[in-house]
Image (cartoon, rainbow, N blue to C red):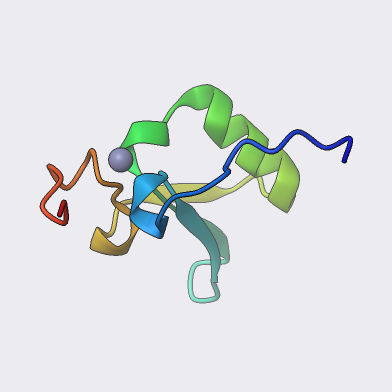
Length: 75
Ligand SMILES: [Zn+2]
């Protein structure tokens, strides 16, 4: 398999995640992002992948990795 596999195992909370939604009321995207990956280079890649220019960045409890939650779900 030529494609590099970076995530061999782990639960969803092990990885910083996010979501992009379209705000119809304000005609702009909302980028929900884990604080761990809220960085200019990451946002630039998101902008390119989703072809968005006007957006706001928001945080949500659904997009917090184990590091952000202080490992409260650890065994
Ligand atoms: Zn995080």
